Length: 409
View (cartoon, rainbow, N blue to C red):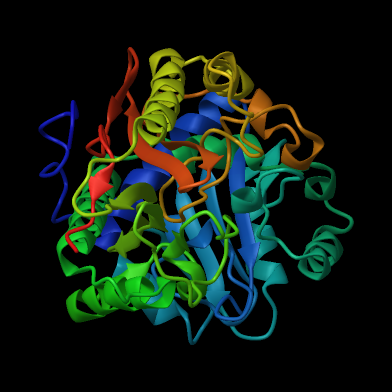
């Protein structure tokens, strides 16, 4: 870990799920007070089939019947759930547990009457998928449940709240992310020695899958294209499944990869060169790599609390185009946490597809990627690092790739 807080790898490393969830409940209470919202209501059901992204911040198990998790600005937290799910909530030991049999309506209304909120943040948001777990059907059911009560008109979207709670990482969360970064980097470095000249993109993927499987880790996104592997200039770069292309002498191998450790993800890109007769990467290839590194550094230098997402992206985008390169067709960076793409503030341009995410502000405690690349005849020169935003600026969680790696064979 380069330039990172040396306490991060150990701080909270052994924290269990109950401790982590208790920390997030405390964060939620503080955020509710700052946002002048009375309570946060996460409403869900059958989450094994229709998971809510916020639920793992509050419970460490899936639920079956309609379930409501309520956190107030005063720090009270309670869960109303089916009787058969209640033992799991009691074992967690974080919330008041209110079981029911026939209908969630009476205990939920009783809980709301005790709390008497004027504003209830609900688990939906137009732009942030990590805050938008409430299905339309269940929303209609909740409106029906709250009919003829003052709480039906108290519902507001919970995007701003979830952005704070999910984005600001606790010590326990940072420890898990640090472990995921360290493991991902170890596996990516190992590709250099393990690589064989006849390997296809699919062979590279199988090698990384085998290392994950041996250690009991999961990929950070869909296994079908985690890793995403691109061999040479003919590869179509993106969220693509590895194919049968091999890396010819004088071409690049590009890998986009991450592992999940104890529920927290990493997301890193690295590039490798297969030499002709042992020669170094050509000068023009090294120049492309340096241009990518310079643009990433430009974004890194302006990434601090209070920065606006699209302004950070613009710093990197300007740096790469000022060097005569085409601008990249995506955001510079996204948050990483329980998911590789973890929602809320996006370091991206103000394009319609991103909604308001690039107009949100960066907060201390958030973890981001910084990623971009350029197309060359040798292959895709892509870089991606992970950084933690501190009180006064960013610091790297990953060890930045400062030169193109050479394949061993």
